[in-house]
Image 1 (cartoon, rainbow, N blue to C red):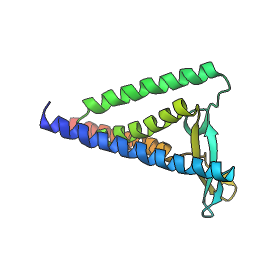
Image 2: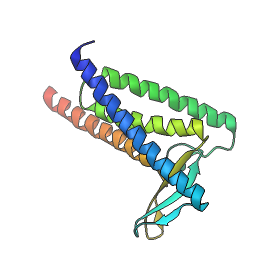
Image 3: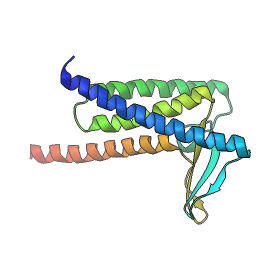
Image 4: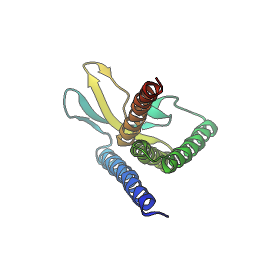
Amino acid sequence: MQLKNKKKLFFNGLIIITIFLLDRISKLYVINLAEINNTVDIYLTKYLNIYLIWNEGIAFGLLNFQQNGLYNLITYVIAIIIVVVLIMLIKTNDIRVYFYACILGGAIGNLFDRYYYAAVPDFIDLHVNNFHWFIFNIADIFITIGVVCLILVELIFNKYLKNEIK
């Protein structure tokens, strides 16, 4: 394996592990608060609360499932997507590797929770007045950042290629 590939593997592995650990530590902290206080409902600012919910669906609580079979199927699909993103990270040699690493770190964190708890603990509640965004966690933040950045890179890169062809 070339030194360049080893550095890429090491650095991206470090990003993935760091995101996973940030996610785990934040979730364990909030879960421990819930065990001590029997609930977590902390007012931090007029725009941000910490409120623990257990998400049995997919991103941002969408598609909450009551059936174990469907839940397990979605969990397997998420695992397959993680493998596909890992392959894309390995095969990519540009800035997108960092965004794939962000997605992987967050996705692995949420997959761990789906397996360990059979639900994902979400606790960040952003709101303005009575409008509340979906409650989410640190892993969701990194997944969203990775996806948005990939979209922006593709839009900019495609625009660049179109200008080169002219």
